[in-house]
Every structure is written in C-alpha cells, then in structure tokens.
Amino acid sequence: MKVCAAQFRPIAGDFDTNLAKHHELIELAVTQRANVLFFPELSLTGFEPRLADSLAIEVDDHRLDLFQDCSDNHNLIIGVGMPIVVGSDVYIGMVWFAPGEARRLYAKQQLHSDERPYFVSGREQLLLESQGFKLTPAICYESLQMDHANDAAALFSDIYLASVAKPIGGVAKAMKHYPIVARSHNMFVIMANCVGPSDDFLSVGQSAAWNIQGELLGQLDTESEGVIVLDMYSGSASVKKLTKQAMLGIGAQLKR
Image (cartoon, one colour):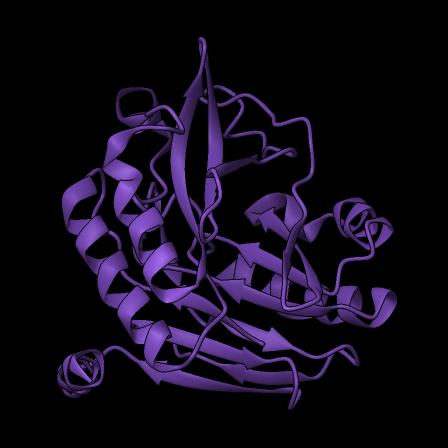
C-alpha cells in the first residue's frame, strides 16, 4: 500500500496546463506503484478564490474524465482539487476517482475567513478505503483544526490526507500540528502542498509524511515538483522528483 502526495507549480486559472501537469505526476506515481495519489488544494486552477466563481465546474464535468481513465487503467485512487458548483453554491472541492466507481466529491468543511466571501462550507466528511486502510481527506485550513482530525479518528481513519496551499508561515504551523495529529490518533499523516504564486502569497512546497509516532519520514523541498511516497507496509517515505530524466524513465516503464 503506497500513498503519494503530489507537489507542483500550478498556473493561475489555466486548467489545461494544470491538467497536463497532473497527468505527468500521475504517470510518475504509477512508476512508484502507488495505490492512492492526491494533489494540493484547488490544484487544477491554483488557489485563486477571486477566480473561483468563473472557473467552477460541476462534479460530473467531462473535462475530468481523464482522471477516471487513469484510475481505471492504473488501478489508482486519485484526488484532485477544483472549485465545484452545486446549484448556486461553489465549494472548495476535491474530486475523487476510484477504479470502476462513480466519482465522489469532498467539499472543504471549515473555511478560513478570507475564503467565506467566495465559497460555501461542505457538510460531510468523506472516507476512502484502499488495501484495507481507511483514509480521510482534509483541505488546508481545516487540517490545522484538531476537531477535524478528531472527526477523522472517529471514523477509524488510518491515514490523514492534507491537501493544502500554504505559505511559509502555514507550513511552519503544519510541521508542528501534524505530528500531534499523528501521535494523538495513531494516524499516518501526509501533506500535499503546491509551490509558487497562490492568490496573494507564495506557496512553499515541503510536502511531507509522518508516521503514527509523529516522526517526519520524508519531505520534498521548497521548489521541486514531484511526489512524496508513503509506504504503509514498511513505514517509510521517499521522494521522487519530476525531472526530464524521470520523465524519460516514465516513458520507458509505461511502454513495457
């Protein structure tokens, strides 16, 4: 059982370019034999609340079909970030794709004050399952609120998936908070952060994974694109960067 958190540099509002980069990172995760892969907050548009209303799509939009194809073809659960519209409401959404199943939406339940003018809060926690493990997604601000982690633990979650867009101060808080979550609830924690401009701040990457003792297992740097791979059976984590050499290797492996 391997869970991957993707880190990359989204282009604000450029769905097509971001979609292509998602595909590259999916292919990278496949070479690592991943079972689950998830992306940072609002990964397909970048974290741009002021653009959300114009960029929001419905959860069954055909532009997301690529992820179902990838999920089916690679037996991979995939979570991507996108503003999702339901009726007149716009949510900070994560759309989840599992092999042979209907896509599922998780909407951020706890919004930061600067998000409330643009988004509506979600109302229900999503629980995922893979290889006998239970996984709960958390989106940025709410992942730093202990009551959200408490709710995940009440669902007997094994792995806490933190999908974020965080500047240097937010990452510093995460590096203190997530080990507490891990130790308090006997949960692995893995964080996917983006890099580069996000709204009015700079996201600084450092995507990472922690074991149930709260020990940091591995971490990407502040600028690279790639994945951090959490291996549940060995209790270890590794980093795989998305480089030209890595892409050549991916092409060779996928042709086999």
